[in-house]
Image (tube, rainbow, N blue to C red; front, side, top):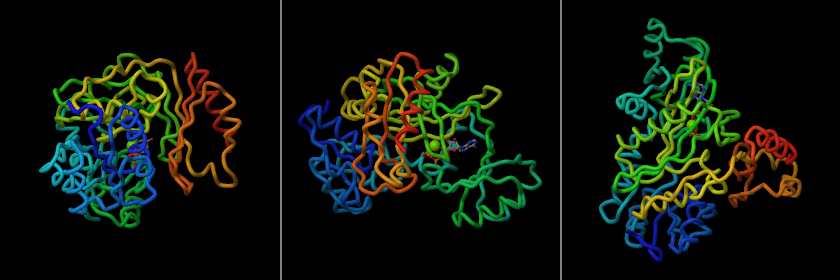
Length: 375
Ligand code: ATP
Ligand code: MG
């Protein structure tokens, strides 16, 4: 076991790294963050910020020498950097696990090899693959997605025909892409889980997620999905974690279509936005759980203490003036989290709030009203 007093490494200094840093420091650990941004949200709260690129061999060697275990908050850390670190210190999750989720094509094939369902998709490497598609009976509408480095719906174009598919492929200027059938969504849910070094698994309660413009807007827990559906989602997430021989916290996003079928959307080899509610509404937060998992501590209880709605605060809210914090904080059940980002760009995740209460259905409305009142 890696006990309090030890130094933990975090690759990536965004808000996920920041909330991990706070959890780890409050439990008496030291944290070293590696991130190229001198103003990264986590860097300023860490005991040490190594400001360097993720591929900087010297910086990685320094991190390895300082840290008993290194983890990540960012799925696009080059797998080679994780491999290099792993020659000198312990790294969770493994380079192999992260690598499988970094590329949508590899990820979808892995999900299907595990026996689980995804939306129908086709790999588009060149315009000739689109010609083939025309004769294969592929159904539109569909979404063209770049295979790597997409996030928050970036690098995605909705297409309704073969012609639009050609156009989208040309516009994205990145190959390969995945053309994914657009699912007629009834609901989106996600499962955040932790898997310990010894293979013990613990799931957080299923979150119901609502996206706006491809970005998570809010998560509601408990989700409205039926109990068997929630159990199935948790079982599938565990199956994926086991197939990855995963150690640490990971998240699985699911679609539920109108026919009630559960489809895996994607896997995040890290803590997840839809798990932020755990900070205020669970016995153990996803960030403390990440720490526990990678340090070989027993996993914490994931019991839900209260129904909760988590609402993201994007930079758009800052357009004319600062959001009206006073009105939000007037409700004693609100928990506000801001990530310390200086520049509120549109679409940028600046913070979130959680609204706790007795009744999830009422909470939805209350949280939405509070969100509207912020602008
Ligand atoms: P992130 O990593 O932030 O979750 P991303 O860029 O990887 O985002 P996706 O998860 O692929 O994006 O898509 C973002 C959202 O867009 C989904 O949660 C869903 O609401 C919608 N979406 C994406 N693909 C589909 C699809 N095939 N059918 C229906 N909706 C989709
Ligand atoms: Mg997603």
